[in-house]
Image (cartoon, rainbow, N blue to C red):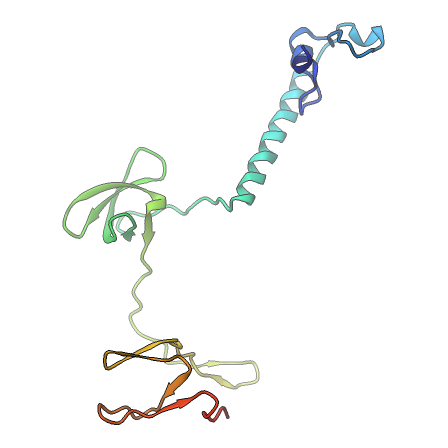
Length: 181
């Protein structure tokens, strides 16, 4: 009885929505509040819809959920569960589902979340150097490898290898000995 007479998020209790009046409980209330009166169903529906929308957006923000872009037909994709590449051949009648042809010719149906579109191949590197507002040319950053493989052995990441590497003569210097200018 108490559960049915407790108000919901829309401000009305289930019993009040059903019967059009508040129910008499052990909690003392004025007798005029127990009289039947019309309930505005449209206002109740709007409040419920707003509460559901708020709950949905809150959940999506908390879990970082987002709508993935649609994959077009002819796009090359990476199939995560197979660890192979394939080509999207057609869209399924199910939402977010596509048919993918593997490199071997096998046709698979996969959800959009199981596919990663491969980036388009760049034909030529840019020959125009990047400059700052002051006109200084910015050199491209070389990727630093923390551990390098050299002749089958591991080289400690605290050592730098000199520019002239030969098979017989390898010179190693510590980072403290390297000129940082």
